[in-house]
Amino acid sequence: MQLSFRTLSTFAAVLCFLLALVWGLAPQWLLAFWGMDFSFAVGLIARRTAVLFAALSVMFYLVRHEPPSSTRNAVSLAFVVGCWGLALLGFGEWLNGHVGPGILLAVALELALGLAFFQTRRVSLELDTAG
Image (cartoon, rainbow, N blue to C red; front, side, top):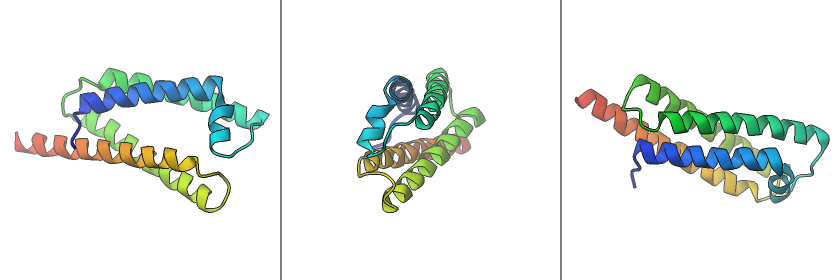
């Protein structure tokens, strides 16, 4: 199923906003789901991560109407690299026993989002070269 860039970007904006809220206000919930303990250091990193997710949310919301372009291509490709990198790290941490199986939900979502943006990017490039 091929999603439009607008739909995918809107979904990513909402998801990143929700993640910003959770990482900023209740990081212990996600950490518990992943089988990790909360500490001051982890809380500090979680709050900083929340701000990054908020920034991604704003970015995806603002580019959702962008036609096929180098800007849209850059945003999509950067997100693919980020999603797939996080998926690899999460899977590796699970294999090494550092986190519980709850991380696999995040890994699956990261793989799916990366693939969706990769497919949208590929279709955009095909349309761009055909036109």
